[in-house]
Length: 263
View 1 (cartoon, rainbow, N blue to C red):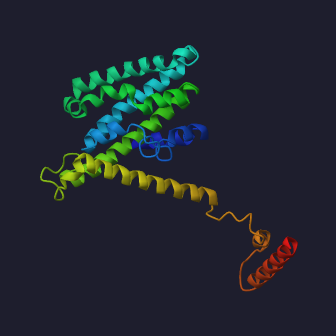
View 2 (cartoon, one colour):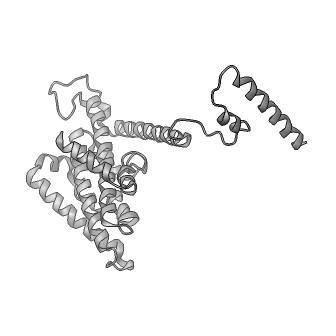
View 3 (tube, helix red, strand yellow):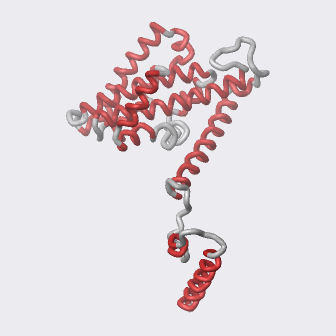
C-alpha cells in the first residue's frame, strides 16, 4: 500500500506532457483494444488470465527497455538502417526475457510457447520505437512504453480472465473445482474472437463517452456557443419563473430577425 501511495505521489508531480505520455496507452490509445495491434498473441495466449499476465509483463519489459535504448541512440543510428537497428535492440531484450522466463517460470514459458520469442516482431513494440522513442526524450519514451505495456497487459488479463472464468469456471486457476459450469467454447478460437470483439466495442463506447464529456467541458455543460440565446442564458443570474419568460421573448425576437434577414 505504501508503494502505491508513493507511485501516486510521483505521478501527481509529473508534468502534463509526461502524464499524457503514460495515460494515453491505458484506454484511449490502447494498443490491443483501440489500435488493434498484437492481435495474434492476444487471441492465442489468453485462454487463462495468468498467461495474459505473463505475456503482458514480458512485452512491457521489452517495450520499456527498448524505448529507453532507442531514445538514447536515436541521434547515433543512421536513418537508412533505423528499422534493422530497432529490431536488433528489441531482439536483445527479448532474448533476456526469454532466458529469465525459461529459468524461473517454466510453466509460463511452456504456456506462451513460440509467442514469447515472437515479441521481437510484435507490432506494438516496433511501432512505438518508430513512432515515439526515435523522436522523443528518454523520460517520455520510458513513460510511453510503460503506459502502452500497462494497457497491453490489462487487455490480456481482462480477456484471459473472462475466457478462463466462462470456459473453465476458474480465475487464475482457482478454485480447482470451478466457480460456474464451464462453457468450453470460450477457451476455443471462436470464443476468443467473440470476447475480443465485445471488449473492442466496450472500449470504443467508453472512449466516445469520455470524448463527449470533454467536449462539454469539465463542468459538464453543453457547448452552446452556436445558440442565439447563449448570451442571454449566461447573463441571467438565476433561471426562475421571472427569467424564463424574458429569455423566451428574446429568443423569439432573435429568431424572427434571423428569418427576415434570410428573406
